[in-house]
Image (cartoon, rainbow, N blue to C red; front, side, top):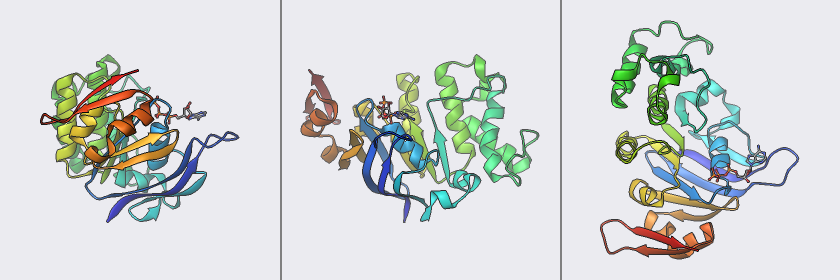
Length: 257
Ligand SMILES: Nc1ncnc2c1ncn2[C@@H]1O[C@H](COP(=O)(O)OP(=O)(O)OP(=O)(O)O)[C@@H](O)[C@H]1O
């Protein structure tokens, strides 16, 4: 079954030309997909359509087979969690309270507030905190955490949401190499559908089963890393000369102008 279907989608800001054009792809349950492309290619815009933040100008985005705009935000959030680059502004909340926000879509009454998540919720929240190795800082104010620690809190919040799909915008930003590898390994091991934008092509090649390359708001390539991440596609997508050394275990990318 496809958990996400993006069909014939166009999007642009109000009163402006299209930024995304004719985007069609479907993501089966459990697939790990990386979205790559140059700055301004439309990666974050595409993610915003998938996590129901903005509606397509034309075309449809379906989540679990249903038009995402025919379901309410809480219902969408029970299926799909997003980890974004913009982080919450409520820096006074503790890490644990931010993770607890992930339970809101599951509570009766959408605005149930922060007070006292009940037994099952507390267990899920603690598990997410443990999984992201945040135990030592769970009761600290979010604003006092480092960029990488905050990023892990945001992933823990997404896990607490118990979604089928996690959408992440540049999840490895702010993370040191070990935490990058740990996060991607963890995401792979969840058994969930994962859609992530990644600038690092080596990480994309290693992490994703499928790579979708955007160029000027259109899909330039869509396939397994070896097929999508070719020298010709990278030259087109990034406007650089690309060399790929495939003699080792993992492809090595080098670029020049
Ligand atoms: N609300 C908006 N109003 C005007 N322009 C927008 C808006 N949202 C996005 N854009 C423009 O659309 C283009 C695509 O932006 P987007 O953030 O999707 O690119 P991206 O591939 O994620 O880039 P980056 O790698 O730099 O994060 C950019 O030129 C951006 O300036």
